[in-house]
Length: 467
Ligand code: ADP
Image (cartoon, rainbow, N blue to C red; front, side):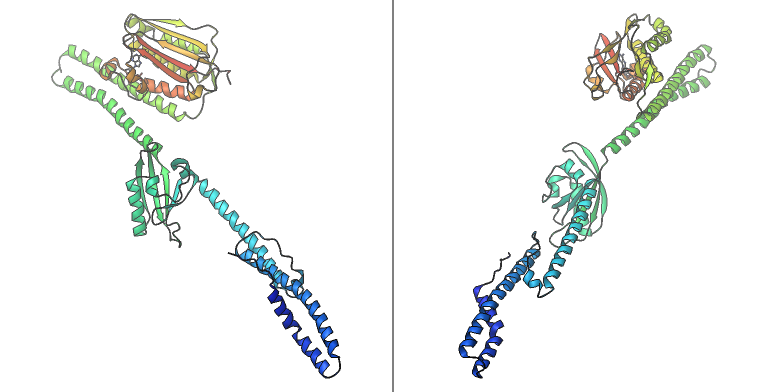
């Protein structure tokens, strides 16, 4: 607490008395030796007293201004340079103090900008930083931490903010053993996430400063992709192993028990041929998928004539249609505008969807392919900026797909009725390829199906000229 000082009357009198004491002695001696009358000596002393008091008062006022100035500096208050003109004539001290104050201010500003820079640096780190003391009370956090765990984290217990035993035990271990460590943990709230934590120990500043810094890396996506990749490899191997095992079995039979039976030879060779075709289809689909994934980040910008693609695909499937006594009805205007995309990939979309409609449609039924420009668009983010799009619908009359399967239909190797679709010859990758291509084109796939009636697969694509 600073107390403002001011000159007291007693101090003034005391100072004046001390300063004028030698003069009084000289005047009294002059009076005693008769060089000055006693009255003259008294008058002279009185005049000297008055002038000295006036001068001393000004001087003392400056001293108390300077004292207040130094007190304010010590308390880090904002201060103006003091007006101490009477004092500066006497000594260099006031100027030295003002100089000290200015260099102090400069250093404070430098420190302030260093702290601000470091805060900006820590805040701009994508990793989550949480700093705690030995009692696991949060001392500081960065922006990434606050955006995930909420604002005002300081002074809260780490366990209340990140309630995970693995992490808390890890932090306790680091505090005890004085050695950093790394660990992974899973959090269910607010959304399920996987984190990799690096816990480092730092010397404790007095007063319970930072002792532990926890750096968290969100590895949820990484783990998801790793799992997907592992599942994919397992599924793909399984899909290839099945026809291979079957071919191997037939070869053994042909070499052994059915060695001389020509009728059986013919029958088995046909099955082996089918299995080899199945593997070829599977490998082709896998290659297509990987090629599409490699280009996933670039949006195709070409001009694509959808009507031409539909007519070509109808032609391609003419034999399969005849086989099942099915027909295709086209409902597409001749002046259908171009879509924006890559022709080869959109041909594959049409090929897979039309192929499925024929594969899963009932024999003797009609498949309808319609295409039109529409302003009624699905409520998807990619469609938000569009006013219109081309909608291509492939409508079949088959068994349909029960609604519980619809959300998973475009997953790799997902089949509604595994045994039946494998028998039909499907790879389980057709719709995954369709989804990836449409996604790359910033389009949308919508599937509607009624069990016992059939399915409609609708593809929405941006128009070529549309911004
Ligand atoms: P597949 O090569 O097995 O046909 P897809 O990825 O093309 O693989 O399709 C996935 C699954 O979706 C199919 O196995 C099938 O069960 C179902 N499905 C696809 N299209 C249709 C359709 N038009 N009608 C009924 N079911 C379908």
